[in-house]
Image (cartoon, rainbow, N blue to C red; front, side):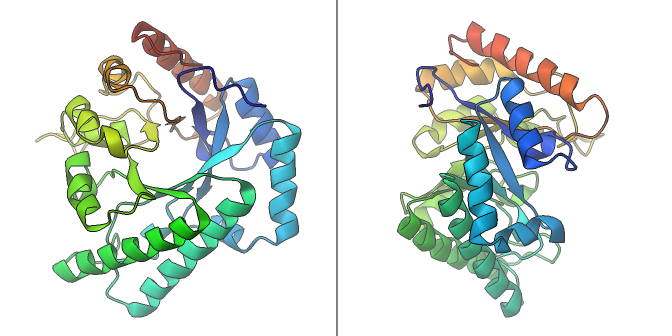
Amino acid sequence: MHNFDHAFRLGLYEKAMPSELEWQEKILTAKELGFDFIEISIDESDEKLQRLDWSDSEIYQLRHLCEQHCFPLHSMCLSAHRRFPFGSQDPTIREQAAIIMEKAINLAYKLGIRCIQLAGYDVYYEPQSDETHRHFIDGMKAAAKMAERAGIMLGVEIMDTPYLNSLSKFEVLKKQIPSPYFMAYPDVGNITGWNYDTCTELQLSADHIVQIHLKDTRKVSASCNGQFRDLVIGEGEVDFAAIFNTLAKIGYNSPLVLEMWAKDAQWASNLKTAKARLVELGQQAGLALG
């Protein structure tokens, strides 16, 4: 049995560990570092997309590995839609987006994953328009129906691009997709990076947040394009102390995920540093974190 006494479960983004590690090594590393689960990545690369076509024996082999080590894959970061977006003007790409969604839900169901993070982009590599927005809404409605059938939560990420970079914008979107399985998955780094008042945003969407990415960023300004990745927690401008105080105030009790990238040989010590900083700030806010 897992221990759910703590106020928070803190997961680790798969890409915070080197890609060459085997699954057993990833599980043991994340567990040793004191995390509660791993968030598996299904990004736009051919290598990660191939995971959507795993055989049942491959899927259950990984699930049994998780069971053996009492360490779940609780969530999935599905960023494959950046390459195959729901909002595309090309109907064959939209069809591919739907196939990816269906396969991802099937994979999540078999792995015991409860939450899939969706990319909040209508399109990424092609021009935006009212039409791409409408296609995105249609795609999200269809995705929500698939998720309802499987009983798996969809959480739309609040992104690093202006299309969906605040929870305020999510609330407008949510009105069109009222499904209880279509919710928000904010990244506090992205919201901060775009100069929104992150604490007000979190309070605004308190009833719709199913999971949160903890990532540090540098803000967009007249002289800076912002930095939305590759920072160790504490190196950027995200006010984690204020964020944890807000989470305590709204009674937030869903999982959190530490989002960093293993970009050099210091990745493990960077994760230890980041986790220690978060635990200390969480405890100061009165949260049982870690």
